[in-house]
Image (cartoon, rainbow, N blue to C red):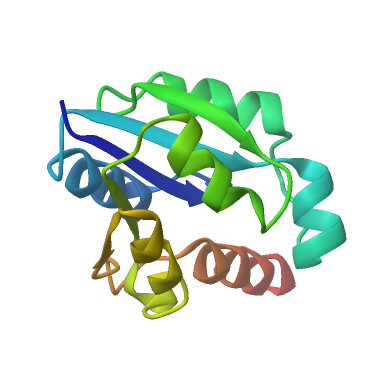
Length: 134
């Protein structure tokens, strides 16, 4: 069994997220999604989520490509996660290209997948803010 892991906030879930999760699952047999907690998002990324962690987790768990959702509490946990969950492949969007290559030292294949170009949570938030101004 090939175990795949990916990380993200997955707020305002959209078809770009679904595309990423589908393509990540195609990399193996079992997909683990490490979901940023509200505290991690705020304290480390300065991001405020629309949906709280538990609701984002429920949404991810309902997606057929996702086998397990676990919390992301800090940047450093990636090394321990790949060992604890016996991960074979680490998958992220290509906007992170090169940032996680150090995991190859842990015996994990690192794969960067192209993002869905026309959609992002940031773009959705921007569009909604512009609509509110009208």
